[in-house]
Length: 244
Image (cartoon, rainbow, N blue to C red; front, side, top):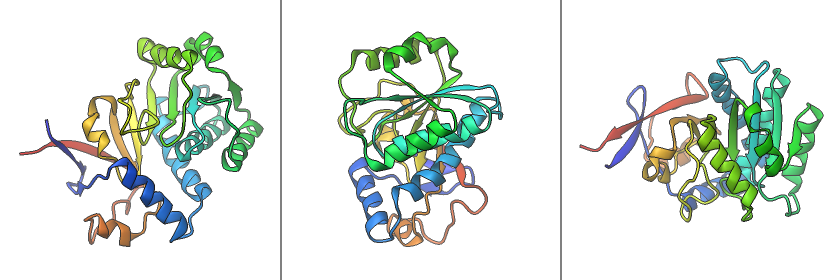
């Protein structure tokens, strides 16, 4: 089945493959002087809105776990957890690759999160605490995840326990090489959706698109001319449509 995405107002949204997406982000940093902090902080506020919806519009007394890699999506998941904990939730963080030296960007995000009460736990500890969590965030796309049996078991627990999982960009680290193992309740695309979200749509769940300040010149290059996707809200819902 061939699909494409539209907004609720009927605007057709183009997609790009993951390699082109990484090039787009690099261009934003080098040509337009964005930093990973600019991109992750803005996105985390949008992601917090999505997770609050899952928690019944209220983070207070919710229990959320984030699985992260050292990547933009990992920074977003960490910052989102910080916002939710600051709003009254309990938050725990799992590093998908705990053996790797952390980048300065992720180290700073983790420090900020810990200062607000976020706890870091191992995949093994997360499995033993699985019944405590009301939902999970996955921020591993664009990073590296070591082959870890406890990490694989944690993924199985998410699917078996039907814990709502909210993915950032894509529910695995590499959209080209890896079919997702996690069935997401929702996925938040950043600025533009990946074409792989169409290929693996059954794993995506509710699909949202958030504003990361992609310049209009880039949107025009992608075929979106004379429209402002985020004129009313920083997060919009994307609807799958069948090709006729």
